[in-house]
Length: 298
Image (cartoon, rainbow, N blue to C red; front, side):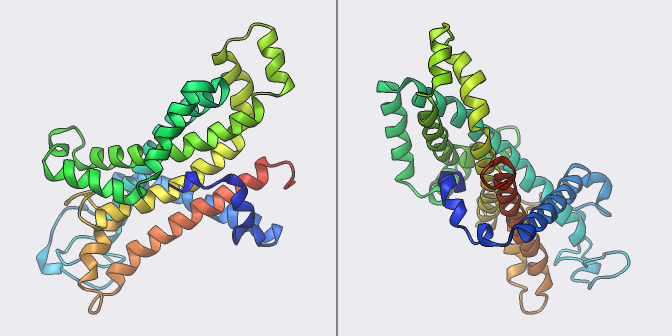
């Protein structure tokens, strides 16, 4: 996903061309917004004013009021409660998938870059094969085929597990390529040669010498990549291939409200705005991390 974009390319991004004080302020606001989203997701059962799945057809499509700050949807469900629980779904998917990508990316990327040879060739040819398929189309294929056959419904977590599996399968090659490139730049450095001369194993070299020196670009890629994962999960749910009712997702909420976009347009605006703000927050936070971790920026 976004993690496949070289870190050097972010220096030419529109965000990086903003004045430094504005970039720092944007990163701080992005971090604050994400903190609020995380708090809402973690404490969703406490913060949600109503049951997100409870229907009340008598109160359907009510405007914002005292009992329902953002109104109700076409089934009389509280919009605020569904938005809060939708944040929990999005962040759960983003954190879990990015964790899997980091696990595979760091392991395979450092091994391929440090050892080289046939292992490097095998890993990189397989990643090239994965890059031959567009990420979101491959995720749609996986969720469509396995979800349509009922495979996900028989597993713990149901469709949520299916979304996690699909996005993790298509997202790891970019992280592998990034980690391998960073490892190749370090493996012939003097401190690595000194570690080898002292008899250090490959695992020791990777953990004590390579990993600390590549954490900067990896963390930036992971932060920006989480925004892409949130968008991908919402896309799958919007298409009906991701999170299923009654569990809310921002993507499925947009899909359900789209047919009411003329009579009740704000039902579409609320989840779409939260989705856009969350993705922007991850991007601004990633840019702020790059400035903080890069000595040349300081």
